[in-house]
Length: 296
Image (cartoon, rainbow, N blue to C red; front, side, top):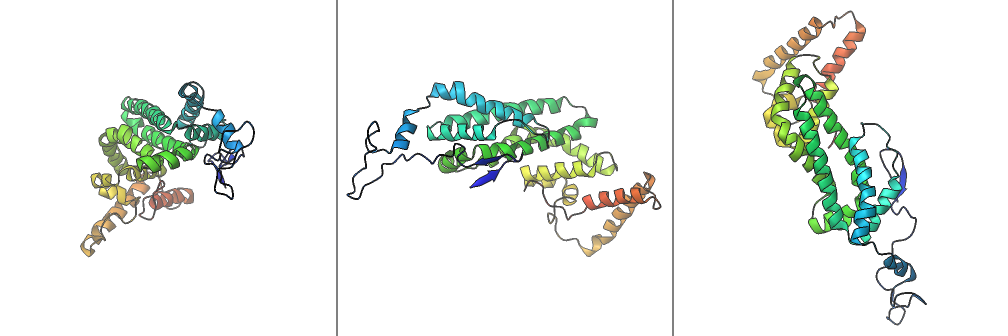
């Protein structure tokens, strides 16, 4: 089976194109273990014998394998959305596969979580030092950059996820990594970010509709209960999160729509200017309740 990474590099489930080592002895017709032949370990096939002879010690892992993984993670976490990173996905995937087979999953998982936690703490500090006028854009970049990195990081560690995280920890790698961003970035900044989002919502064209949609949908993905902080704002981008409108509230909605159109005209969106009209239509479309979460 083949999968495709976000940078359109194809890599196979086993990058070295070799079958998985047979770690259990094969049985003959008489029920006894089959010998692997001369030079092999008793009761183990020749391919498994060669695999077991090539042991990866903890020093090998720390000095050779993890540095390769760490370098790739660094590049993926810091790339701009849409950029191409010149790393060998096949080589990284193979490193993870070998380390899992050699019982280094626990150490590798610990190192991965520590690495990403340190990165997110730096991101949080950078946000704290950002001026209010650039705060929303900076947060959106951090969120988009991290979510984009997960699209590559999670598949690269698929073997660790399957044979350690899911099996022994009863969790999922993607969920764990999303939780890291929630704990170390979003939760620390939500009460600084939300007033700025509400202010931007009431001031047309302060930020682009796509930026507002990206942040609101991202926050909803991280922690759905944050809807309660600004239900009206979230309802513009997340469908069906508010109860059905009452008939008595229809006049209020009509007044809000009229105010939006007045704001559009005051900011230069005259009816005779078709190009500006299209921009106003785009704004109204992005502010409707028909959008779906981008990370769900």
